[in-house]
Image (tube, rainbow, N blue to C red; front, side, top):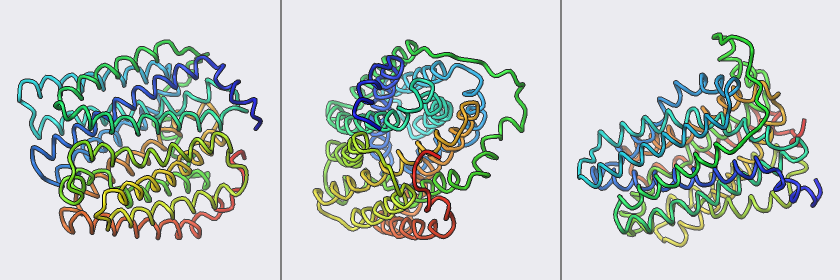
Amino acid sequence: MSDIDMPRLFQQTPFVRFWMARVTGILSNQMLMLAVAWQMYDLTSSAWDLGLVGLFQFVPALLMTLPAGHLADRLHRARIFASCMAAQATVALVLLASTEFSWTTRGLILALSVVLGVARAFQMPAQQALTPLLVTPSLLQRAISVSSVGLQIAIVGGPALGGLLYGAGASTVYLACLALSVVSAAFTFTVHYQHTPAQRAATLASVFAGVAFVWRRKVLLGAMSLDLFAVLLGGATALLPIYARDILHTGPEGLGLLRAAPAVGALLVTLLLVRFPLQRHAGYKLLGAVGVFGLATLVFGVSTHFGLSMLALAITGAADSISVVTRQTLMQMDTPDEMRGRVSAVNSIFIGASNQLGEFESGATAALWGPVGSVVVGGLGTLVIALAWLKLFPELARRDRLSS
């Protein structure tokens, strides 16, 4: 891949517009989730309730994602994404009103978490399956890396900005989230591509076709399930409000920095991957990155120093970025376009399980063993998973180049 590819990539106007839509939408989502987590912990001081926020997002996403992937292969993917941003804006508006009029409750936050879960179910397959339609195949790996850079910029900026704005009150954060979600939807409506609606009628077999496709391709199954179990066990995001307030003794500004730290590490590594894409030994590098993720999670779990905790989280993000770019590129390269929505839906289930279900797992185990015990056991589990996948998925470990 030559240096001339980067200028060519940014000449793809639909890709650039969608990149901007994704950045603003994810920025809004990150600020929203920080404010929701802090507000829930302020209301209940319960690790269990922090975990429930993730569970209430995951369950509807699990139920809706496969039908959403089928729709992404039949309907205009940009319009699906825009509709999801509109739903996110509605959630921000409700939270803004409830905070201003002092009727925010535990039940309301959990109910709105369900809405966010449904929106995510439709958003993820549409956005993942849309990028390959906006660039040429020769630019796809760089496009995925650049998309990941935008993702990390939003994940860095969202929590940091959200933490600062929270100092002026939760309403300020929700107002900013509302504005950003509306901007994201507006950008997405300007994205045009050649859309050819599917002609086949929807059947149960066609809805589950993505599951069958991934099951038959062990490289894809191994890469997706590796991320599922690694982040499910090793993720500590749901416990950050506890670490911030009770272990590291900081406030919402510190929580914002902690939530942003993984994205800082991810951004730095993703920028390197844009300049120097993975060429050889992709499988072993993927498994090695997951091992580093587990080790860094262990360090974060036992740290009581804010700076060391930030560094450990940054390393988890750096390692995870290698996993994200590798998995996404493998998925897009090995999947025909008419299946990308449904295969992306399967990937979204794995991501949702690792993130939202992982948050519930963290909250539940923290309620039993304490936050430190939960994170340490999770880090050890991630290391075991990385070693096990060497044996369980040798085709993934031996994968040399990302293009098949």
